[in-house]
Length: 265
Image (cartoon, rainbow, N blue to C red):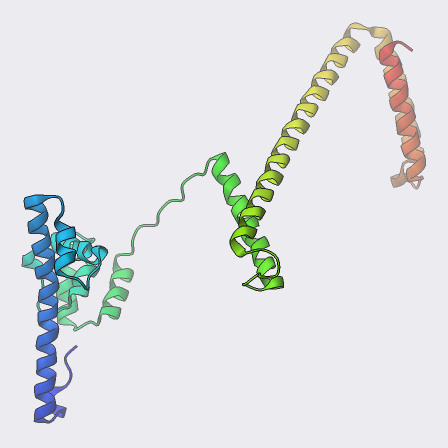
């Protein structure tokens, strides 16, 4: 954004003009470095960025790759001298037509980089990334990580970040991670055992039902026991004003009789 030159004296005006020239040259330099890198990659493919780091000692390789990426995506014909290199970087993810539209708007309205980013975010928000569906092991790991972070938070709250009184933070994390892994494995194993026991009971109940169908006498005996249970429950159930302990004894006795009926008394 250009300052109001009319309100400045001659020396300040000259200084401002020199600053604008330096800023313009800096923008040109960033594009020139990016174009130079692209030219090197196209000619020699390998070793280009290693050589560039020896020349531009104040740059990181990630910075150089960023310069090359923007130069590759924003064509020379679309670059606007009135805008900063960062303005061009902001539109690098778009196609040429949208780049031209956005850069023209920024230049005509003299948008600061912050306002330019706000306009882009409002006009062309990036598509929301769908959350990947996690596998059983990934969900298990996420639960473990959440539990570990919570326990570690409590540990830091109670003992402080240095944790010098017993063990280091790294050792504590490792030990707690191992303990939680064991606990989670135990829970999964317990769940599987309970599932097998439930399946076994269901299979046993099904077998007994099949036996009852083929044994009329046993079926009659069970009907009599069930009728007695229902009759007593109508009088003694807690919902009817009865005693809970008495009702429990009635159910236990009825269960024993049904078991004996299944065995033929």
